[in-house]
Image (cartoon, rainbow, N blue to C red; front, side):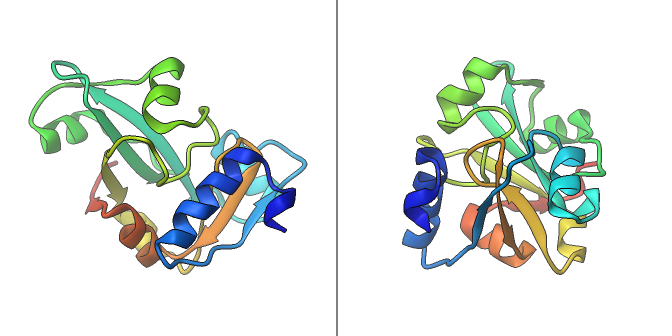
Length: 159
């Protein structure tokens, strides 16, 4: 099945498999670029979708990943407070440069640089969640515990 997946999705899956984690990845015919699109294509609630949002610090231009429940709006002031400096949303070119993936398909791991990651505490209340797997049409199902493990993310209140 891996040979049938896109190159970006295969790269993500190889990285996760290298961590000793076996995830099923699905490439869907419909776009999963937004949380609503993904939930509709998968048949789950928007809360079960993991939004991968990239920010950067204003002064140092350091990347910051926020993995949020699809129903939650990220409180950027809270993230700035956590990192100790102002932040800004990353543009598409910066997202591609720092993650190696396009917006809408950014997986939680597999980036060419280490990215400090914050995980929405609300995701830990759910039995299963769905995250992007390398393209705007690919997703993987996992648990919040696995998400924390593979990202080494900091679980925080982000809304």
